Image 1 (cartoon, one colour):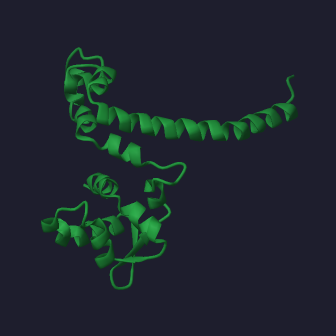
Image 2 (cartoon, rainbow, N blue to C red; image 1 turned 60 degrees about the horizontal axis):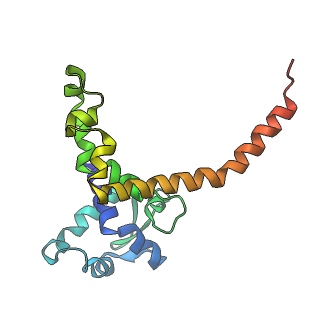
Length: 169
């Protein structure tokens, strides 16, 4: 249930709205900001989602229904260089979750992967036919690759320093 609430928060863009505001935001103002996305008949249920996100440490609640980001929720902000938005959306998509529910089928049959057991085709074939989900996957891979590449000089330098101090004999 917590992963579903996290996915919902990403889909509703709650972290970005709070980030752009820059200080704790009152629930009524957040509701107004999200009213373009949320169906009007569902806006009254937003406090339930917010309490859930606070309970799991995704958001912080201040006095009188004010909310702000926590260090962990900053990973859900689009403008953060290493954000996990795409990973949350991809990992908690029903099509990727379905593979977990088919682990028993995978073990009992001759499927090459649990994903194949769930969808009747390999991972790459499935996502080539699902461009929206493929785009989410590609976005996350791009973020991960950019961060690995930007970190590489540090890793390279640390490895070279260790090799200089280590005796070969």
